[in-house]
Image (cartoon, rainbow, N blue to C red; front, side, top):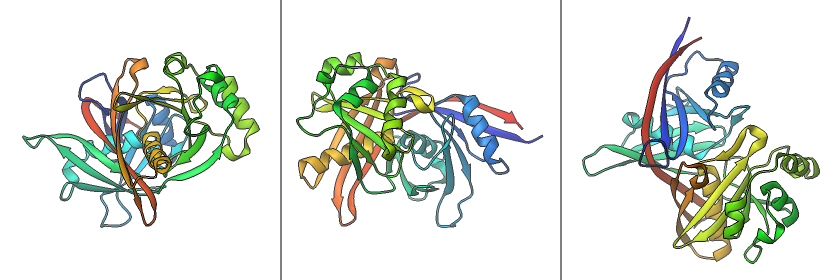
Length: 294
């Protein structure tokens, strides 16, 4: 029998029972792909990470990210949380994770006493905009009236920067509150839009005071609603910079309120010679420790 230790953390929060939950296996050497997928399904969280030795000695680790049904090339809160768990491996406060989408740089955050409080990550790829979708399809997936979709700044637009593509949709305050995913509409949308490749994650946003409010739905992979989605926050930040024409910008996004797991994601975006690059960061809180034998 083989024994593997794991820890869980709440990510993008400064208190327990907030933010997005994550399970981390800090040493997954000897696990098969099938075992990683089975453990992620058993944990039943939006993502679980498995840490392996880096292929390049200059990097910290190879990190594999699984949701309930498949492996992901990149995700936000899994990198922030895994960085928090592996903070003692940082060199000059920086970790470098090898992932399917590319190299992810993680900067550890500490308080005045030197205690680790969280991390900030850089998305591994520049902003990439995909096709737009109709207001009617976006509204149907969100379970809202089409009048709740705001198109003054942009139509519903697919965007990514290394993670799974997200459909970014600006909505009214009433629509944000009323939204409830319609899985039948999601299935019809992916069937009618070949460019989606059978996948669809819906990221609703609106301005609230000086910041943004967001909600994310991805029911086709088992995440009815996500409490905090770093890999949606970074393309949204990049997209907003793209729309503004500015050279750089910063946004604080609040997510998970409707779920009772409020999360705060701090994002930045800037223009570079290689496109718009974005970051997302936030706090982490440790929760559980345990082990599993396989």
